[in-house]
Amino acid sequence: MGDLQQEVIAAIDYDKLIKVSYGDGGGRKMVLFSAVDCGFCQRFEQDLMKKGSGVNTTFYVVPMSLQAFSGAGVAKWQTVSRIWCADNSSAAWRKYWTRRRTMSTIHSSPPPRRRASSRRRKSR
Image (tube, rainbow, N blue to C red; front, side, top):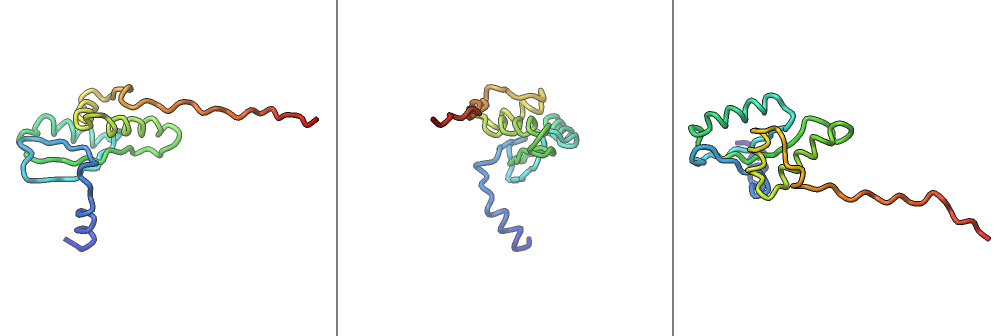
């Protein structure tokens, strides 16, 4: 491996990623970048669920979206957040790919911002 590649791999904090094991988990560790709105990722996850017992690998998933974090893409990134921030992110990841939805109660939305009053006091 190149020096940069070794440096990047050594810097990965696996505890912060979603850990999903197939088979007995094996000795292999793979980092998997997977988008919740990617058709190929969906097929890959479905194949792993069907044939995963023979894979014997632990995947450390970096969930993401193919959408920008604005406009319509915000909903996809909220899905990513619900999965990653779930109490059991591994179970949430598998549930998402099984049912293609997340529990909205896992990650509640922040309270609405207060709007500053547009009326100004008149000086006397």
